[in-house]
Structures are given as C-alpha cells and as structure tokens.
Image 1 (cartoon, one colour):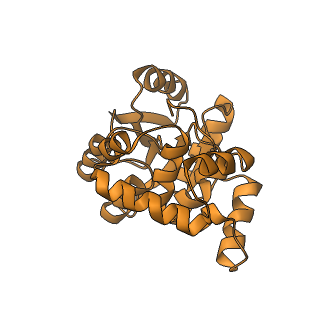
Image 2: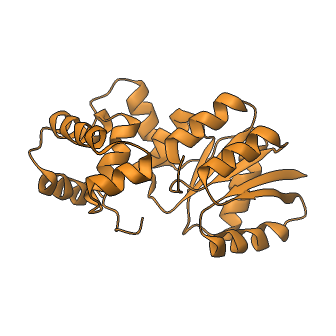
Length: 213
C-alpha cells in the first residue's frame, strides 16, 4: 500500500484527489495538509511513502518546501502536482529533491501512473523537462531566467503576475526591503530595466501566470 501525504491549499482540489486516489486499491491518503507548514509538520511526524505537493500554498511552499522535506525526511518520495507549467518549475523542483512533476491538467490515469512510478523509486518528468536538466548539468548556455536563484524566481513569477512588493513579502515571509532587493537583482541578472520588461519577457517565454496563481 502506498501511503500518501496530500498537500494542497484548495479543499475542492484535495477532495477530488482523495476520491481519485481512493479508487486505486494500492493507494491510501494517510494525511492531508492545506499549507506548506502543515505538510512539513505531517511529514516530520508521520510515516508516508510519498508526498503529493502543490507548488503554491500559504506559508512555506514550492522549492523551499521540497528542500525542507528532503532535509528532514530524505527517504520520502515527492511528486509535485502543480498548476504551473513544466517550463516554469519542473527542473527546479527536481534539483530541489522532487522525483516527479505533473501539471494539474493531466489525466487521472497519468497521475496514478506517475504516483506509482515515483513511489517505486522512479522519476516522472516530460522529455522537455529532462532536456532542461541535461542542459543545465552540462553547463549549456541558459536563458536569463534560468540564472535566477530559486527565491529570485519565486519573486519574478509573482512580479509578472502583477503582485506588489508588500503582497509578495507577505506571501514569502520577507520584508518589503528584501523583496525590493530581490527585484533589483532579478533585473540586473536578466539585463532588463523595469517590471514591464519582465512581463514582456515572461510572455515571450511562456512564463506568465495570472494573479490567482
């Protein structure tokens, strides 16, 4: 039996996933969390085979959450189920310690297949994401946004989604001054001058997210 820790901040999503997984005879949802902090606490205190994580949740989330879980529970397998396209996060998620990445528009059978594969010790990513990882490890020339640190990329994603510095700081538990510093470094690393150019870049590279992301 695959014991799953399910983490997503939307209750309707969690209920839908629980119904889907309950139909599989070899899968059991043994714990559920509505935030990254809850997910970490459950992972720390429970016995799970796999954590099924959303990338964007209140508090600790995304790459930071993956790193913390792997630090405290290195044997726990992680499968990311995200609304963010693979081009945005898959390579970063796997480098942080996840073993799979799947978008929320995937078919139910694909999710179950990925879950079983990751729980058994395998890796589930698309060919595109695999190519990104290979290019990065080979030291190939990378796109400007790939030069950003994981934290800078989070700030970049939220800036191009139209969020203000205060809102970003609240979401990431950072001061407005720190967020502003990240913004300055992002512009410098990417060779751009302002937020409008960041948005244009995001559109051209398929990295744009809506305000509710």
